[in-house]
Image (cartoon, rainbow over all chains, first blue to last red; front, side):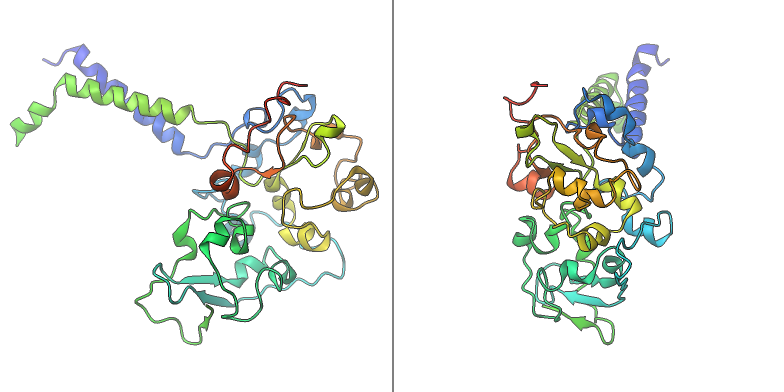
Length: 182
Length: 149
């Protein structure tokens, strides 16, 4: 009843959807084709390809497709904390709630995830004062690469991932003892 | 309901759908080549010195070191091109030279391993929001410099 010719488009649809599914799997361009490495550099083959290292790390939908905080928390990677012996390692587990009067959901800033990677002096006091409410934050400044935008939008998850920072509903009470910023 | 479906389920409609899907598929697969998010190109002195610009892969380093190792202990500022790095300082053990000394990582005689970028590529954090939104088009090498080497 159904001729072969009328089955053909079904087959094409199937193949294309399979190809589309393969596209959603994480892929990393080889260095020679990434647009910034010089493919004529004879030493290029000695460098590690991103896929070789990153495909083993926890997945993320943005940035370089790796959830770096999960990679660290789950012990998938164990990067060194210091090179100078006198460096203090200080992981602080304090959340600050921000954007309390804005329209978008409230921001819960986790010190913990940040201090696992960074030193206190990386942000304090040049980028942010160590006083809740003392910092005037602005998305425009961040989009220009200032404030949170120094890292988010460059090496940490990009600013298009709104809900990962604006993560706390406005219509629910904040936890008891929550530290309120600006 | 069933007749309605039959009306829709005609080879012509399917062909159109298949064609659309194929076009969409091609558009997805032929997307522009892009380096890893966070790769830094440093071209403060390289082009002028006849060297390829440096490509610093953030991903490779953060697997092995937390941000603070370079950005606190070694004093790297959070700005592409904002650190006054030169080969004399590196040989002296400053900046990259803290590790790229032949002990922790390869030494300065492996020029091409760091100076691996396309000639003429401007200093930048690749794929950064600034590059995408504020200065689009700054990613590609200058026409004069491209194809020089």
